[in-house]
Image (tube, rainbow, N blue to C red; front, side, top):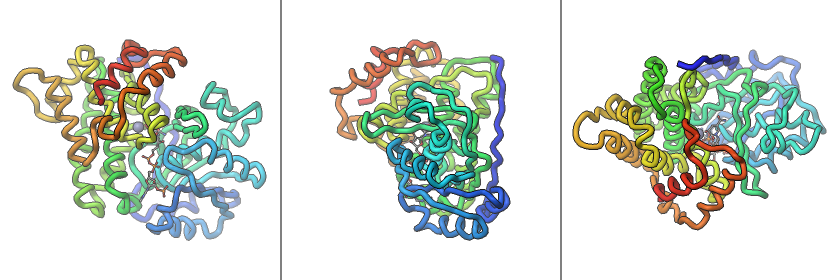
Length: 382
Ligand code: NZQ
Ligand code: ZN
């Protein structure tokens, strides 16, 4: 096991009715800016719960943060906050609203240049407005991490940032808020969390049996509960288990001391940027392709995963069986697993590879995936 430092300051408030606790979590004098998406929270009662809980607070609102939150939209919120200062940002919605809010929190005080530099040049930021969240979509893990992924419409870029200043001060996770998720978003959430676990697990054995089994516990839970949520969307226990699993899939705990491989996410962000696919749709199409391409390097973990999650112990090509079973699982969630099913062909694959070449770093746990391999992986995903 490699050396590591683990630090996570997020206070989680989990369970039915927990939105009512908001008033105790935000300082009473704070001028709050509540951020939200395209309107789901108005339809499912979450907005009313938040407003009731914050009846004694001063609350302004910024709505319209879209899925794959856009820099252009977020800069309007930054402008608003520069004109009417806020002391606390409250994100109410899914991962996109939360990621967008993290960017707003960092960008408000960034006066050295265009805040896009926080993403494009990893420009250091000295301070951020504190933020908290009411999460309505279990998927990204953003509620317990310091990452945000932001898209820029004008250049078709999608870039990630990491900054400890944007750990939420608190995250409220009420599984009842997820009863209204459309099937597509429920499936996306299960697949995204599944992929997060895999990016921290599907590498090579690293003498870390505890982290392996923690990861496998999350995978087994997602495999068991995910399809149930599609069949019984208002089953509290199922929604609660999915929400807790998705949070733990990307809060840093299973990454402690082990190698990681974020190839699927890295290439996936480019597919969203160029073709507008949902984040999880890209992952589901790419992950089996990455594994096929890296089958020799990932052989031992593929076999371990196949045996422990799917009971695969017999027959030829155990690793290949594990890959096929994974694709079947994604299909059972009603998801497409091939890029061609979205009408995507190979015509822009070289452009995608060039973007990585321009950034000058290689992907994979052995840094063995460069532009040529990226094209090969994309071809395997067709
Ligand atoms: O905008 P509204 O009207 O709220 O509707 C949303 C949106 O259309 C809807 N929705 C959310 N909660 C709902 C609901 N509809 C009904 N009932 C509810 N309870 O769902 C749609 C998708 O929402 P979005 O926030 O975009 O989904 P998700 O949470 O999957 O977030 C995806 C974004 O997170 C990034 C992705 O790249 C993508 O931009 N990621 C962030 C990460 C992080 N911060 O750590 C890691 C991930 O790998 C990922 O990259
Ligand atoms: Zn993801």
